[in-house]
Length: 107
Image (cartoon, rainbow, N blue to C red):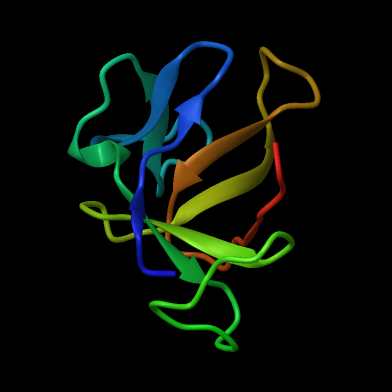
């Protein structure tokens, strides 16, 4: 925990990137997250524990719930409950102050 990572979308070979200058498409109080071919400082995320059982320097274990904190944006990645109008069954990912956790699985 505490390490800085970049998240690569395997299918498109682009980096998950927070753009703090643009609002999210559905949740206007959130920052937009998109896929960028090169990545930038908005593509750096710090892996933090969702629960306080672990701390910086501890190993991330498969099945752990984590928070992905953008290094420059200050608000964690969030999976919106709102469904994208052009992609039924898909939800927006944005960056906003909330309690969203992400579960670590092996790929």
